[in-house]
Length: 224
Ligand SMILES: *Cc1c(COP(=O)(O)O)cnc(C)c1O
Image (cartoon, rainbow, N blue to C red; front, side):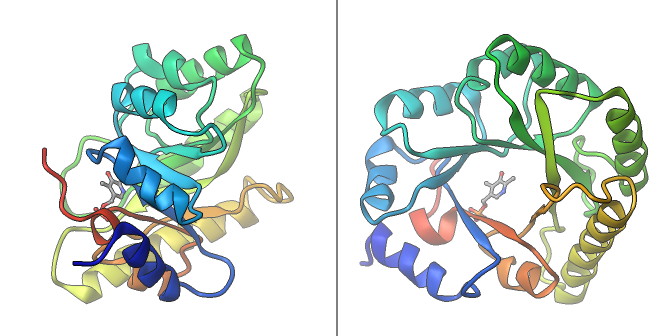
């Protein structure tokens, strides 16, 4: 049996020395388990459900950076805006409008990633690459003073086909570079490409990921 701290360190040992940030995805695991990673020095955690995040926020130290990675419902945005560190899953103009509105109310600027859909699976969520570019163009024109666009988040297909996974990550990286050189040119804070999970993060890093979201490898299987 290995401990959370040991598995965390094993994962860290596989990451490049600089340039890739590790988000430990703690969804479905209790606060005590997160505490083990916290005590081992880790501070960045990812959650996918609002109510669960709220409970953990209350139970755990407030120097944790909470990353929201799941689909967000408009009516729940207000609960996490006061403390969330980054929202990875901005998947519609409507949700961004609500993030802006709620962040303005508490006088915060919230870091956001646009979720882009490239996998073969027909998930309901995320922009296509074309929609992402078009949306950023209109968003920049409209200006969201309480949102800071930090980059893009995406997932590859859940398949054993490594070439397909690699191609999907390459597509996300291409989009990221196009946007950085295009609509976001000169915006130094647009610097984050969040891609890679337990089974595919090494491929994601090979393709240029700057942030990986790893759950199972650190915390074990989730019990839903
Ligand atoms: C659950 C989840 C992860 C972590 O997945 P693992 O396979 O457990 O590493 C990463 N990203 C998102 C968006 C998730 O929902």
